[in-house]
Length: 73
Image (cartoon, rainbow, N blue to C red; front, side, top):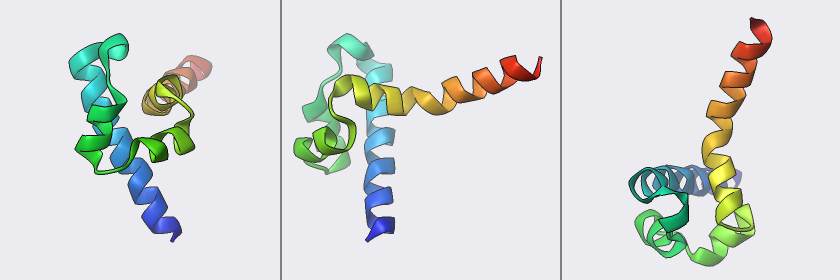
């Protein structure tokens, strides 16, 4: 079950990346992300809370990488 859940989360994040890159944060639409990923909008809200939470999950790996580089300098 955990693998399945992890797969859903990764699928959502990948679909969200595309949506945010194409439409920007303001115009990104959770229904399009839901449709693209095949996951209900309810699952998005359950996992991330809202669009801002999903955006945070999308950018966190890059932000963490930048912070690591900054701290090493």
